[in-house]
Image (cartoon, rainbow, N blue to C red; front, side, top):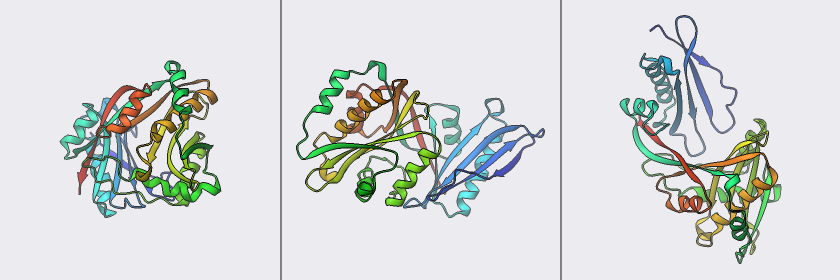
Length: 292
């Protein structure tokens, strides 16, 4: 098969990393596959994330291999230590990555909460349960200025998430980064909602959970990060914040169908929280890593 690999300009590149992109086309200039390579920074300068897709009719014709070779070469040229990619368990993509030397380093469990089936009384009971020393607050979009510094500091709650054998490094967060992340959601037309647990002794953020709702308020929302700082764990804050987030989504977006989230298979604590709130398993993916 005659193939042409064309580098593309990626308009989504931002201040905290950049993406390289390639288009594979056949002799008739018909697109048959794409590859995106995200070059991370802020504590992850060793890492590149690959998203490679080939049209089903063109698989086993060398398209994926050519795109992969191109992306891996670019990662090496940028002095990256490893390339990671994610694919659904037992999918063609998962087998392709395994055959080309990507080892399985992490398993993610994906779950969904159908909002029509939510136990509203049980949810309200969780939200209304007193948590001495803490209070809940929430905001839409970018974090308020008076909370920006403590919100950035609270992001270290994610640093010790179970990551098994994945070489993901530790993301460095500051005020500019949390604002840029919120701005990216806004620019694509979606709505970012954050619920935080506030330590009433000093007004600092002890934990947070983020939810992104599609711009039209329908379909499924997507949970982003949920974390509680180590010094505040053991008080049920994760379940409390997530229950409040669900309650707000049901109230503010009546056309919303469900909420999606994924959790590392080894993160037993967060999996229990999701199961207790009614989330139902949908599928499993593997993160695979190629060491360069």
